[in-house]
Image 1 (cartoon, helix red, strand yellow):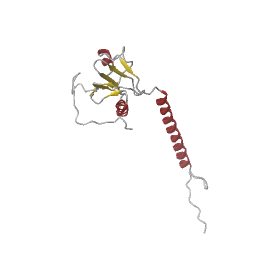
Image 2 (cartoon, one colour):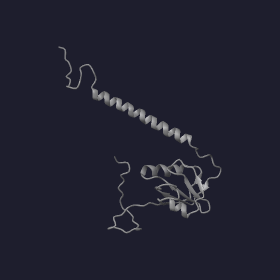
Image 3 (cartoon, rainbow, N blue to C red):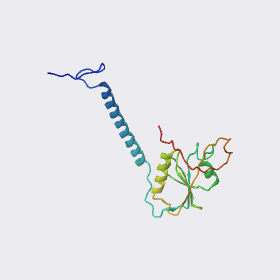
Image 4 (cartoon, one colour):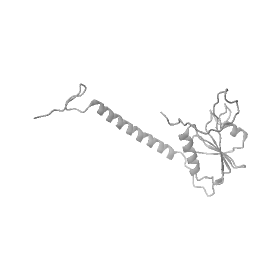
Length: 173
């Protein structure tokens, strides 16, 4: 007795299902795109000047972590970083592979980092700074600054708040 497998209306006997072929093709395209993305990121990181070996790392006393800046570092509408730049002597700029370059005040030992908004960018930027051989952060104090919005019914402008819980939707779909 010869048994022929049943097919649906969309399938042609002897050929693989069109949906599975489409899914297979999409998976292959996705893998190629992921490979290209990783390759482009790797070449961009290597193309940019990497920190050179330093004889004596810079002693940092305070690291100020800001999340964003609206436009340029100075001269336009201020975000979290611009007022630090305007009011402190951040005369030394260090190239950085993060969101923006690092700004340093050699007299006070103050280093200001702009991470970019979100958990992923913040994590990557702080990790990159921590692993940067140009800086000695072993004795540094860390100040994380940030702004948030309040409903005017709950708080006034300039209010400070400490949260007991945090809902993080940074990487949610």
